Length: 266
Ligand code: CUA
Image (cartoon, rainbow, N blue to C red):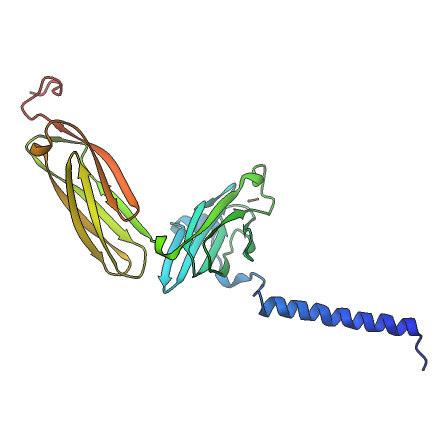
């Protein structure tokens, strides 16, 4: 059988293309790790997102070693949380779901790009080796303010990252002569132990207390403040731990019914 020369060239070119397509797909899957986002993340009822363990308080969670999990809820027209911070040299698994309509979750400059479908949880794992900033965009048209739906992912140097949170309870007003306490609760979101110092500055007084938190948990520091030493008046206070701080004002009123403070007590 005689095959025309041009026919042979076309056959050869078609074979090269087919082999080329298979090679690029194989390289994409094995090399850069491009994969279809499937239903591995599971199902969720959109109306029950607020009762879900993972999505009720979306955000970053340390799961051990250099591994982190980030839960994100997409809704018209924002992400919760809008700002995500993870450390460099981390392996981050995103779990994303939608409260209402179909959105997308695309971390610009990475291979994180998925549709976010109500009822489903999209799961993707990415490594972040170097510090940097990545925009997060919705690229699935979702309504009139679709173009405003964005977020920011910041990869910070490892030694600048922590998941420490501070919560302070302090009275607004206290009578002079009474001792009062300011309570600081420090929560450590990392699975590793945290040893740190909580400081309270009020007026020209300074207090310090060391706290040790084993694993993820919280500890309280209690500061007994001497109001006699502070004297009557407004005193600004600041509680600081690591990079977190909280401020307020404590008013010490004259117990003997000062003329400017008393408003008609018996
Ligand atoms: Cu959400 Cu577009």
